[in-house]
Image: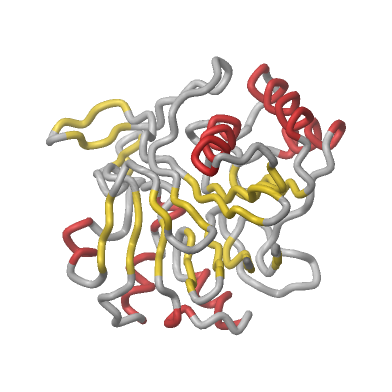
Amino acid sequence: MILKVLEDNNTFINKYYLGEPAVSYYIEDGEVKILFDTGYSNAFIKNAESMNVNLKGINKIVISHGHNDHTGGLKYLFENINNKNIEVIAHTESFNKKECDNEYIGTSMTKEELAKVCNLKLTNNTLKISDNITFLGEIPKNNDFEKREIIGKCDMSGEMIDDIVRDDTAIVYKSKKGLFIITGCSHSGICNIIEYAKKVCNENKVYGVIGGFHLLEVNERLNETIKYFKEINPELLYPCHCISLEAKIEMGKELKINEVGVGLEISID
């Protein structure tokens, strides 16, 4: 598997790409070419061009959840791509209307608009998307310290209700060295996600994790997460996007964490 970071909050000092508080990864597993999230704007497209990544060659688009920092680029992507065979894979609630403090924070395209330009596949279940990569669907609760937080409101059957971001999901690559988990924001809890990935893949060894960890404060959740990572001891750990500097510093005291920025490339057998 090859993973290239097309969009992240950070850019590396010696790599002159565009950064924004968002996520977009280009992933290859054999002949399957995946775009995981599409950032907030068209910045990921400009970065892909600079990195010689051909987005017209992608087979699948995976959406981690329906917030605009992960789906805002969809409209720009489909302005440049005319291929109705591309699969867009997401949780069934990802394209529901989402608001926070009366501001729209949802996707840049509705599911009706997407269905006209791609093969839209909405599911809450696990789904094999390549020989070695699985979409995890809805993440079940596995611990007491990763409680789902309410982030604004979402439309459920015409009624705006508190949004606990049930659509938050991730993908997992099963490598020879163990599981490599790829997340968007981990609203459902990074430890919950990893434990579910282990169950789905019938594999206990975790080789690595990259993505947003949604750890913004130094609190019990962070302490329990650090304890959990010490127990599973992944070789590669890339917390990024929605993690505060304070949380990273605390993690770095007891774990080896790696920097993430636009242009990062990870290759795993």
